[in-house]
Length: 146
Image 1 (cartoon, rainbow, N blue to C red):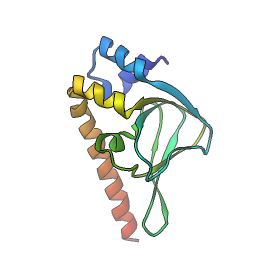
Image 2 (image 1 turned 90 degrees about the vertical axis):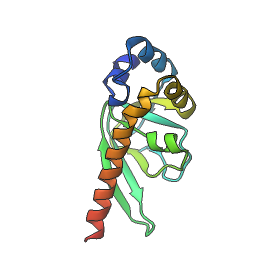
Image 3 (image 1 turned 60 degrees about the vertical axis):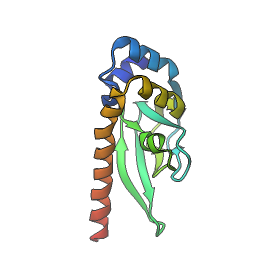
């Protein structure tokens, strides 16, 4: 699947027209990861976001007590890494390839530049971020009840 087509299937970018998608696709770099390879480490600086074109990743959060919690799994057309890009905070979780995985990578610099030109992207990302926050909270609450 070509970059523009993949981006058009991502909820975050679905409101963009063809020429905007084409321009955004120009800034995306394709990266490949082997099974069990770490894409993002919890605590690192967020330098960009990822869109899965093939494969699957798991999101792992290490607790203050040292336990590792599987928070979520993401598959093709899912996006991750956007929260650290938005708030410039360290990565809140680690991301590990479950199988060989290919992603498009969009740097924080390019993503923020696109949001300035197209504020509607910011409005599209809010529900994604809120949904992820709620899911993580629910898992953590469920674990605290054990």
